[in-house]
Length: 364
Image (cartoon, rainbow, N blue to C red):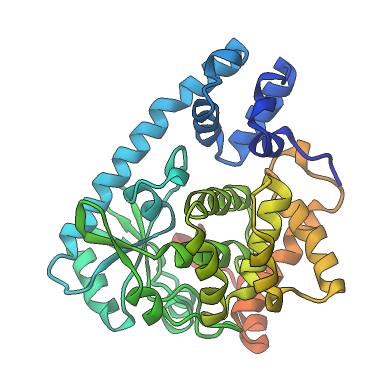
């Protein structure tokens, strides 16, 4: 396996930022670009008041990404406002997920975090009304292939992604965080019941702190694609740092994971956040989620797979096994979400039956 990149080391020890050579900075910045983490790196440098102590070319590069990150936050707030206005008469609470939730709630992990779509959670019974209201306000489904439509609407936990016809913003409308065909199914009613209103924005809601961490863990460790794996692991790292300042959080987290059948993804989240990013996790919490720990053989395999897949997707962070690792995790992600016959059919459809031309860009 390749040596641990500086991009991971500086999150464990930000003081290393001032010791890096210009050549090391150049490589680290290219790794950060590949992982969409350049703006997050700028925030780390600022957070530790090191901007004036790093090499001038590196500082110039980071300053260059600052306006983009600021415009991104403004665009997210604008789009969330438009979504809220579109759904105001539907009668369902607007619960934001992941990046949009972090941004609107003002969480530390939102600083420098870039993302391409806005995820929302609504009751399954409200899907039709939600979709109709969004369509009336300019959002349309980008998937026209009959199989893709059936795949999402019958089996998945979300509608096909919706694109705004003018602004090209993207909304993912979820009714759960995992499909009912998955091996485990966290009850979305419990997630919605525990949601909390955003300060100063009573019409917006986000998941409770423990549920936010668990959803991030599910998204990372039940998905089969890892282009943004390190970014998502960094979300978990920063969420745990912020929420973990409250001792009550660490007592709630393992209990909530057990209640929602999510002890296994939480185990992985805590293990790899601590190993790769130095996230401080109380030993009592690791003991409390021991039920989520896989057997020794499986854990050794997962360490090899995730140890590669969670690195930046840059050539300097790959080795001879990286391509096979990503393929194995793609199959695993689909296996966790579908029973065997459904999985076989889905993979056959994607591999051998070409979609119509307008849906070639569709990915799941």
